[in-house]
Amino acid sequence: MKTIGLIGGMSWESSIEYYRLINELAKARLGGLHSAKCVMYSVDFAEIETLQHQERWQEASLILIDAAQAIERAGADFVVLCTNTMHKLADEIQANLQIPFLHIADATAQRIQAVRIDTIGLLGTRYTMEQDFYRGRLEQHGIKVLVPDAADRAIVHDVIYSELCLGIIQPDSRSRYLAIIDRLISAGAEGIILGCTEIELLIQPEDCEMTLFPTTRIHAEAAIDWALANA
Image (tube, rainbow, N blue to C red):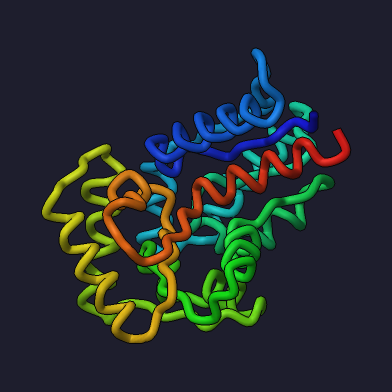
């Protein structure tokens, strides 16, 4: 089994889900008392969020590169960044590593392609929904990406930072998200990417009849696939 390197803490609420899922999947695949070999470097999200808000991405990249290199020194065979938004810095992180970086958008695109969906709705932070680093990566796989309008993007973003990252789950926010999903479906979306790792704390498969692509689970499953390949 290869050792999985996890960069977590963005937020720690979703990093818990990564750790739980990866170990549950290892046990399911291998049985018995098996768990995943992994190392985690957990950053202080308050520092990262401030740099995000101020568009100081270069400074944020230095923090994440330092984390990734620490994970590499600790013996990880590849790196998993436990957040969608900070994949904006994926290329910078990979350029400073000698081990592979498992990109969350690539894993998600492969899952979408497997069920032959061409047009997808994307929910996430405003950085993920509005900037090209995530949407463009999906489009490279031949997937058309729809995002909510400006007012709905503001709702999605604000709920993530003011509630979900703090572990607050509000039924009213779930209802607002589901209404936004309905509008994306009306616009032509054939499925919905839950493109922020915290959104899976709010929206469950039973909440929506549309096909959902929960990126935390998809990324965790891809990590286990890599860890157990040729094992």
